[in-house]
Length: 429
Picture 1 (tube, rainbow, N blue to C red):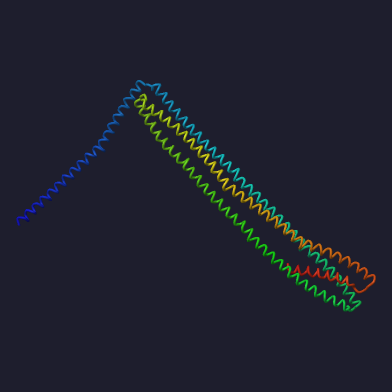
Picture 2 (picture 1 turned 30 degrees about the vertical axis):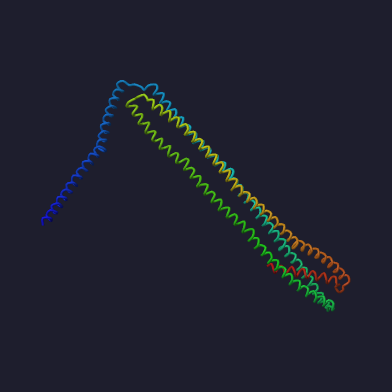
């Protein structure tokens, strides 16, 4: 029981001691906080207020003294101020001149780019458009000429030959009605042979025309797959590469402008604002208490002036280095990208020109072999047949008789030519 009482008393004493110690600690902490606040916040504020009041009183007194007996600053102060103002003006003039030079340089670079790249590209596009228009016009003219020669003239010759053949048939029919006669065995055999020959020739002609059409279609498909498609893919890839190059150039130009112009201008603006504030404060202090600058201030001013000069030199060197770097980058781009692209375009144009020339030569050769020579042979054969027909007609009128083997052969050739022309027209239509 006694031990429990003793332990309870000790616990109560400890709790009471801890409470007192906590209260003393909190009181001491509050006192220290108040003391620290007075030292760090209240006393500096009071000192600032007292200082401001003293400064205001001194300024008022100085203003009254200045009003009662005005005085001017000493010659050394005026000379130093004039020197500082002239140095600032010269620095501003050099800065403005540097900015104007940069603007003029950028304008000249843009003008040079417009004259050397954009203008050249425009002239190329205009020339390419004129070449395409001339090629289309020539193609239309050749197509019209080919249509006239292959369709209209052929149709006219067919019509004339058909009219002549109709007249000859009518005359022969009338003669047959007036003087009916039976052909001899030789004539019948020759007619059967002519009919079989015409049938075989017509079938072979149809097969030749269909084979020629199929060959032309395959050649056109091959040219589209190997030449035209390749040219289209090259143009699309070149257009995408140009767009990517322009995008990268604009991004680099914007980044370079932000780094060299905007950031520098912001730093200059901030430094100018700080300098203006410092000048205003210094002017107020000088007005309140004019004094002669000490040796330290003069040394500091000379050090500032000496520090500004190498900064300007470094700035000029940086601008010249940037201009030289830009020129080298442009030269490298011209040599590695633009020049390579120009060589590729020139080589592609030469290849296209050679291909077009070879194609035109082959088309002309094929046209000469398949159309002109055949037409010449047909014309010569028709003239010979006409001459022989006229001679035979005159001789028949003079001394009517059965047609000879020569006339029969000529008529067979004429019938074959007429039938072949008609078959070709039907197939093409």
